Structure formats: structure tokens, C-alpha cells
Length: 160
Image (cartoon, rainbow, N blue to C red; front, side, top):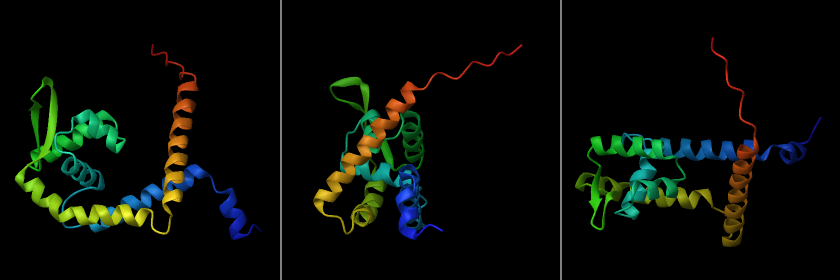
């Protein structure tokens, strides 16, 4: 029988990353009860509040979300009158995101939670450990991008 240490040394890194992501999402979701927001909606609001005037593409990059997901979340938050979308003064093709008065009020209430989550994720880690973790996670993402792009395209189904 393997010891706990041996099991942990053999545990796949991808499994740990997925589990950590789920735990963060669950913890944030638990703390958001009563606000009617999902964790993704919460982080979109927080990021728009931190950087008023962000373009949709910039928001997607900051949150590492794909464009359709970001667009869907922003549309929902616009319908709830928490986010507004306006034109960029120098580029009519570019839309800028901002908070409505209601959104600003809600972000004011939620900003401490965002700070607490960010602190809790790295609790007990030195600044050097945090930077090393960021570097390693970026490496994992780059590895997976290369892995995905190297995969042969799946065969097309022949529909007769």
C-alpha cells in the first residue's frame, strides 16, 4: 500500500490544478450567496471596477476567458444594469466597459471579498513562492497550447 506522501508525489499536476480551481470557485460561490452572482460574473464586475474603460477583448485577456464567454457574461450584467458599454472617444469600433451606479455600489460591497480571495489563495506563500507559482502555471498553459496545436485534426465524419 502506498503512503500518503507517495500518493501525493504521484498525483497528476493537472488533477491538482483542476481541483484548486474548483475549490476557489466553490469558496467564492459560497461567499457570493445572496448577491445573485456567479464567480465569473463577480470577477468580471471586479475587473471592470478596477479598470473602467476596458475593451471587451482586454477584459477577456485579463480574466483568461474566451471572447464568447466574456461577451455572454457582459451581456447578462448589462441586462441587470450593472455594467454599461460605451464607445471609445478615439475609436468608434472599440467599445469601453464601465460600471453603472448600481454596479459601482455592488462592487464597493464586493471589493473586500475580492481582496480576501486573492489573499487566501496565496496565504502562507512568500512573494518568491507566489512568483514561482505564477511562472510554473504560465508554463503549464504554454505546454498545453503547444500540445493542443500539435494534435492532428480529428477525422471528418462522412455523412451520407
